[in-house]
Length: 588
Image (cartoon, rainbow, N blue to C red; front, top):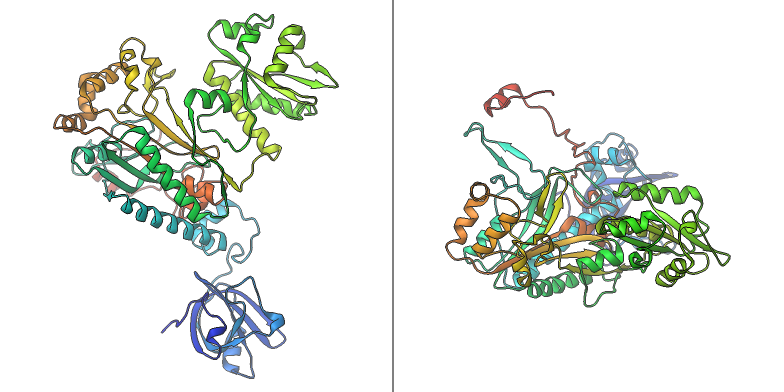
């Protein structure tokens, strides 16, 4: 028997009991003849003391022990002296008097300290992830992840959902992101792809009459990485029949609230019920379609004030159909020019040509553009933005989305710099009334804002053929503390409406049949009204645990270049295996 107890469960109640423990050496200390070993497993740490007067042979073996050795230890549970109790440990009231020790496995010196919170480079942590996962922080993250997913499964079951697994090798049906491609050995020149989501498959389940489906789904996207992205990630995916937007949002609000209250009871949920914003209002007020509403700093629209201004950057933008947005920075007048320049660089990164600014200092408005603005324009800007002494105002003049996004990025940077974000608070907001389409400069045509099966608002159906860019979608995203954690929509189940959407997207009947024929054929056999949503579980857990990126809540993630530093993937394959797949490689 390797163990009678774990290293996290012994208390004073087991005093005098003979026990066997197994685990890793967390720390070894030699105190003038007495050797102390902190033995660690997944459940906790237990202190073991080896006294030569009690068992000389065990003491001799313990003298050779080093950190991360794997041991089996026998001994008696005894109460620690009162002045030596450790209230920070579940087992801090007891220790084991070692009476037998067996080295199960020796260990090299680890590349970083396991029992320390000292910073370690991420590359090193990912290369030795199996060691990194021994640390308390990572162990906590995996335990919370397990509890959260188990809770979700239980809640979905209570709500009458069936968990149905869907394939991870499917037909390529481009839906926005680049797909991972799997060559077929049996069918030369043909390929599977790994799914970006189970979107079409869950809609087929609705046609099948499943009614309420969910899945803890693995999804794959071959896209550039960010802190909240991974090439493979996990979704809570769900789909329902005979539901409205409100039905789906109400159910998910109930589920999310329960999970947050159970998993992070110490955090304050400040939106009860969740806020609800239209896409236009979210962009106009916060500069983001996934706004962080834990703090103020609202954008103002000054387009009407400056439409006739001598400052042609402003008036010209308004005349061409753009907007001029403003963001008041509290106490920003003292911002050094180098910092102002950093905000201008940020604006350029988000597609603007730059930022204009003015400040109110010593009762006087100052700034490079003041000479181009009339007294009335300046006065109206002061009133509109509610600027106060010592404040600075940034202006962005551009197309609506660009101007809002630029100042939204500035807003987030200011909030972080000025300490306006309370990480103990959770604020959630539904974003609704998205545009059904968006213009792609790269493709020179309209593309789907979500996917081509998203239903348009009923009141906008007449706009589909003549003014499709004005059509709003029956879509909804869920934003949490400035991060999108979920998104979904009501789907199109009417063939005539689907045909009009394809026409707006310039998808021919032949192309539609090639790409989506299986789904369209299924709909011809009776499709119920249906809709769904997917949560990004990695992002959700990341936010709940206050981690800086989703790599910290995934057991074996890829790095920021989509490489697996642990196994070395992606890697080359033997030439005969490549040939068997009927593909050839080019170094170009």
